[in-house]
Image 1 (cartoon, helix red, strand yellow):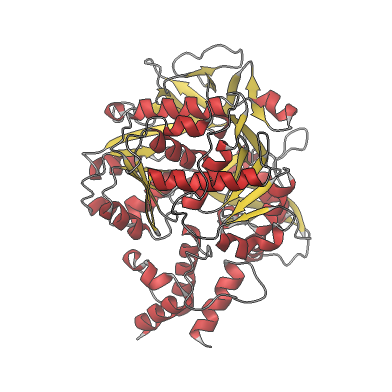
Image 2: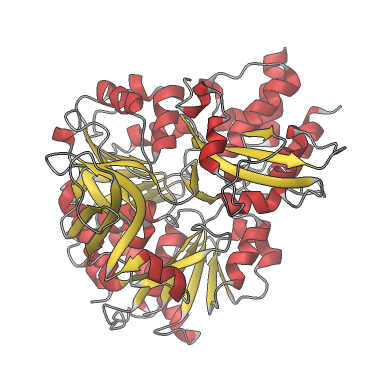
Length: 81
Length: 500
């Protein structure tokens, strides 16, 4: 399945509690849109570790890696490569 | 005196920086211009003394200017947590009649469907260069009139509003400044939401001394927060236990220079001794203040000064100036050293009571004293040590969570027979929520399906960390579940702090 699609679905269901999908753009800042708080980031970390079998270092939890659907997808691709 | 006048009474220079946000830095003059602009708007809409105006926003110039403009018009500010779920916000809004709600645009996008019943003042994200109309003077207010109504979830699932008067706010602001010796050179990294009394007290105290605040979106990206502290040469940091747990165990904080960081404040729950020691070890040149407070006491009640931190480890100190703290036994007498009693507080900072809730007010406020619900002992020198909470809150990620609210949510699952939520000490969460549940025979519920349900209905910090199925509940003679006995069912390791 498309990586961006999986991330959008996860965020919609688990952080926005929405059954209607993710209504923001893939570039939208999760922080600036009020979609994630510090717990939300921890959930995202747990999700991608479980889903993609990658290990996220604390120092990698930055806006560059985690603050949008695109950033997350790029980060995951980089880790899987 | 109107609290707005009180806060800016000593401003050394209007050209000094007051706020540093992701959108830019603002001087005191910028802030005052925005406040005038907002309060002129409010006046033109007929807002006046006695009106209640909500604020629903993350920490920002918009939050602060709305708050100060509300006070300036003589109205009462009602801050809402930006993390409320739509259902919760709906409940909170129905508990109070608002003349207006100041709402940040991005939160409007998320919560717009719930706020349609209220008149809205929406953040247009535009910084006001200068007020179009001349600034009006702040409305005269009586010191005993409400400046704020602060939500607290209390023991019941319905939220309560704590009345904080102008006098309460000013008295507590003065006391905190004095006990921390704050001056205009302070620049604090502010990660706590202003809708939370501890966060709001940082705002009030730093404005009053003419210092400055650096705003961040909580601790979402902790390394980013540390970068901001570095770049802006922050002299102060204030946090609740979970903030320090993250900083000490999951970031480069212990290794960073942060040479300007001189004052560290910790309140909002007990930071485990092991972490206090780690903090002392990694910041030997900083003053560490351990404090204790309650919304019903405006914000803060006690302080353990830095020079006594090692000697009185585990203590919350003594009452701050203007606050008299006593620990009373069941006979209402002050306890002897070692004896356990309940902390009561007296001072100008003590709220006159809950809004429209005389019964709850009667229990919490007796003879002008705040009955805190916290059990404590006192040592020979009068230093107070909290033992436990009398009431049944769970403190999860710094939020005061009503176990009944969690239980009510889980009981929505049809197969549930009985459910009880307790807080278990946890280094990361403060307290982890453990849920005990008994179900009907043949039920297909699993721990995961219970957690999934809670995750759909409740905000993150209220989701159980663990769900334990049991056949029957230990109860007392009245059939009331004995939560103390439930704790005994836990593994010994879980009854204490989990090692990380």
